[in-house]
Length: 93
Image (spheres, rainbow, N blue to C red):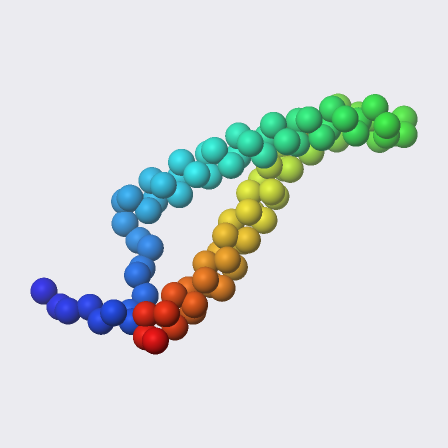
């Protein structure tokens, strides 16, 4: 069994990480769906007549949560990159 050095980063692979990622993604999609549904219901009556179509509302309710999910995972990735060097510096110092 090879010895891992203390400074080597932990890789995030495996069944546990994938299951947690899938569950978190489902929870975030549900929350994002509720946010977009409330946003569409609040904004739709204020739109001009030519924009007040059901297809536009359906597209926003479908695509909005996916865009929000992409932004949320990007923010999570950036935060992990920012926090990881601080953790290594604390381990070495």
